[in-house]
Length: 160
Image (tube, rainbow, N blue to C red; front, side, top):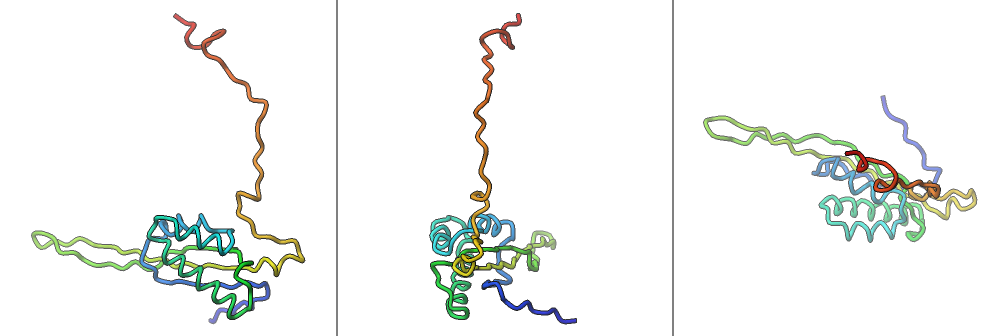
């Protein structure tokens, strides 16, 4: 049974990197920082982060932007990372010879990374903007906090 391909009607462009030689957990640590950000801001963040996972993700974001400008004719300045997901790939297994004829298993994890870009100008008529999740929620500030002073009027230190 073949899977049906979804036709791209919503101005989305993606790049998929498969069998990247790192664990999915380490790649997710970087992906969570760039999800929802603009293309230019993402490139700056990935260049300055000190993790090994940044370079393959940088190449994927750059490739997705090249797909957007070449295939769809989008402007790179108006691109936003709408989806970024990391899935576990196959695990390469090797045996390392040890003393007395024994062997230890070496497991080398891989992951699949998918970066989806959207064009902000494509959605301006519908007032749809992809924002970082922290910008969606506005935190309430509590102004009616009560402070308990332990040295005045009771508390733990009054007891003998």
